[in-house]
Structures are given as structure tokens and as C-alpha cells.
Image (cartoon, rainbow over all chains, first blue to last red; front, top):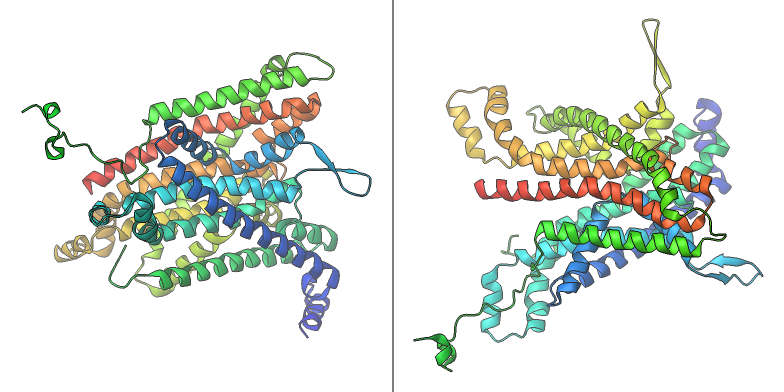
Length: 246
Length: 284
């Protein structure tokens, strides 16, 4: 029924929303959506892990480790993500060996999608380190001292007191960063990863419906972000401690 | 009593425990220097590697780089120019939309909120595509044809998300002024417009500066996106140089050079933002 409606729209109004009635275009678009979601989910998980690792290293006693983390954060925060991605995909990839793809050919060790995930995780991870650090610093020192005086060890202190509080404090900033990550995934277009923008551009260059596809694309991204905002908002609400305002 | 001449723990000098917060950060100058040094080491190593792995050994990698560096720098300057122009455009529009966001007229407020949220949540690259493909390449006003080259369209495309973010910054800044200011202005018979321009905005302005600078740094880094839509910028020229030389081992030094340029420009901005933030925090 939807397909019929959009087909009629195309015939009568000249508005060609081919993704809604053409099975091939729809398939491409959905594949793109799937790739984007896949990159988003993996990169979000990896960037969170990187952020935790970074903040743990930044708190260690080793001066070298601290300096390394700081350098990593500053480097990735102050250089354009697109150039980082190009650097990884075009430059670093040439250093890696190729592997046999099982059909007699050679394929690179890490695919374009892989490099996109690596670059975006490193990029967002750098921001996450800063966000987690700010959250940990915002835990009141009296709370920490109270826990210390109750005989908590450093590890227990982190697990039972600091991290639960810090996590709630940094959730809003984390939200922003993760939304930013979702928006950054469009850059993978530049290295030819078949994600949503790439799929859309293929469709509009074949069906000549730039205007319509552009709007569909924009709304799809806004919806994707809205879903993330909704989920994170629910999570934030569920994690709220009554009476403890941050 | 000297502290060292006792073994009673109470009398030992107070040693602060290892901070729970991982804030043992190096001084900013040291840090910037260290990062730059890391860069330099990486850069040197990649150059050496390029020199060693060159097949057949041709011109030295450093010489090739020196030849291209001025051109890449020109491209980088174009990025900076684009960032200035779209920041100016975005700020003008964003301030107006931001003030509209705290309007007393509900439809104006709603529309401004909707616009802000929409353009803030759409990816920059998609907005850029939007502007590039959907804006006409020339306008006709009263028989006068105004050309609309690609780079102007790119500026508009980049200004859209900037305006939305500025709008949010302005709204946040205005909201951060205690309501007592509004009430006392009202009791002094200021009109709403007077209150806004003479009392609220001058105070809020100070608080908007750091996030605004932060946004500028983000925009500067986003200007490389224009290479995707086919405008000659630093990244395009870097790629073109690599194609012209066709020496794959030069890729890492070349890209590092471009990264270094952006880092050298954006890092001081990030530092200044931090120090301004700190300064305004104390006074607030």
C-alpha cells in the first residue's frame, strides 16, 4: 500500500521517493542503514572501552602513561576527523600486510568499514577520556574521604562509590559525544564505506532524485539520533538516584 | 619537635594520599610541547621509513615534502578562510535564532527551538550535501544575475549547523543568568528589550565565549569536509600531491604534515578556551 502510494506520487507529482517502492533501491538503502548502525554500535562500545582505559591510565602513577594518554587525547581532539580517517585508510593501511581472500586474490587486512570503526572509536574515545575524567573529578571529595574512613580499598572505592556517582554525572556529556559519533559516521562516505550516505548518493545518482533522497536521508539521520537520545534519556532517568541531584 | 625524630605516625608530617582523581596533569605548556615532540618523532620516523623503503630510491622524502609543503599550506589557509566566513555567518544567524528561543511569543520560541534541534542533530556532511546540491548556482534578482560558486554554497552549508549550535549556546548563556537579574530589571521599569540588551546579554556574553571558541575549533576541523564535495582544500591538495608523486611510502608523512597544521592551529584555541572557562568560573 505504501509502495503503491509512493508510486502514484511519482507519477502524478513527480516526487520520486524510489526507496519506498523500488525493491532494489530499498535494499540498498536498508543495507546502508544497517552498515551505519553497525559502525555506530561497535564504535560506541569501543570508544567507551577506550575512554575507561584512558581514564584508568591517566590516574596511574606512571608519568609516561599519563603523558601518553594526554597526548592521545590532545591529538585526536585537535585534528580533523576526516583527515584522521584518510590517514588511517590511505596511509597506515599500506603498512599492513594483505591476506588471501580465499578466492585467489589478496585483500587488505582491515576493510574500509574496519578502518572507519577504528578511526571513529579513537576519535570518540579521546573525548570520552576527558568526559570520564571530569565526571570522576566532580565526585565530592567528602564522599571519597567518608568511604576511605570506612576502610574501603582503592579498588572497592572505585567500584562501589566513585564510578556509580561519576557515571551519573557524566551521562549528559557522554550523550552529546555519542550523538556526535553517530553524526561522524557519515565521514566514512569519503573512503567508500557503503553506509547510509553512500547508499543514498548511489541511489540519487542513478534515479535522479537528489531532492527527495536528500530529505529522506536527513530525516533518517535525525530519527537515528532521536532514537539514541530517547534511549539515553530513559537510561538516565532509570539511573537517577532520588534526592541526589547532579 | 622535629617530625623526623619520632616514629609516632601522628607526628609524622602530613602526606596527602594519592589523589583519587586522575588529575595529575602536566602543565599545559609542557603537555603541548610533549605532544608536539611526539608528533615530531612520529613525523621524523615516518620520513626515515619513507626514505628507506623507497623503491627505487629517488629524491629524498624530505625534499619532496618541502616542495609540496607551501601548496598544502595554501590549501590549509583556504580552510581557515572558509572557517572564518562560515563562523561569521553562522554566528549572526545563530544569535538571532538563540534570542528567538527565549522569546515570550510561543510560536516564535517553538519554531526557533525546532530549527535549532533539527540542524543540531543532522550530520554536518549531510547538511553540506544539502546546501551543495539544492542551492541554485546563480540567483536572478531584478534581472541581475548573482553567481553562486561552490565555495559560497559550502560556507552556507557549514554555517547551518554552526548557527544551530550558536543558537543553543546563546540560549544556555541567557538561561544561566539568575532570574533575580530579570526581576530586578523589571522592578526598575526596564522593558523586556532593554533588559535583554542592557542587562542580560552583556553578562551572558562572557559565558558564551568559551563554548563559542570551542565550536570554532570544531568548525575548523569540519572544514575538511568540503573536500568531499569537490572543493580544493588542504586535504584535496594533499591527495593530489600524493597522486602526482605516486610514492605510497610518502603517504604517512604527508598526512601527518596536514594533521600537524590543524593541530598547531586548534590546540592553542582549545587551551585558550580552557583558561577562559576557568577564569570566568571563578568570578561567577
